[in-house]
Length: 113
Image (cartoon, rainbow, N blue to C red; front, side, top):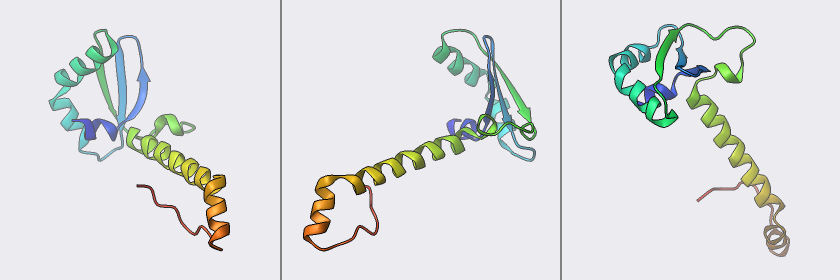
């Protein structure tokens, strides 16, 4: 169920309800509806209060950028930003720069282990 929920955009995290939205034509809303009670129990356990799930279908309203993005897309953007910071940090590391200087080399790419 997690992958289906990650494809939703979080619309609102209210006191008694969690509203999510899927784009028109997505098969995920039906999957989530079939397991609504399980999802509501999980959200309630995590948030420490009873929560009702509201599933919407449609495009994000105009002017809603990041908040209207699917959770998976927001997570990917955060991972990409962390990777870029690590790469920049590695390029700026004095030890790595000195090793490149001693070896008369250039840093073309950085691979994470």
